[in-house]
Length: 115
Image (tube, rainbow, N blue to C red; front, side):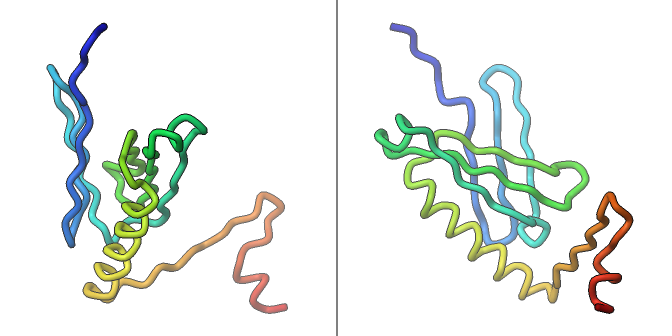
C-alpha cells in the first residue's frame, strides 16, 4: 500500500476561491468570484459511489482562466455554494455579465437582435 498526501486544497471566501496544489512544489491559484463565468460539476460512477465529485471553474481572469478541484465530498452542494457566492460578489460590485457571441459564419449577437 502506498500513501500519498492530498496535494490539492481549496478555500472559498466571500471574495475569492483559492486553489492550492502540490506537496513538494506548490502552486496557488486565486480566482476572484465576480470573475467566475461558469461552474461545472462532474463525477464518474465510482466517484458517485464514494460520495465525491469534481468542480471545474471557467473565469474571465487572465492569470487563472480555468480551475479544477477534484475529489470533493458533497461536490454538488459545494458547486451551489460557489454559485451563490459568485452571484453575491457580482451584486456587491455591481458587475453585470455581457456575452458577445461571434459565429464562425459571420453572424454576431447584435445581428440577431435586429431580427
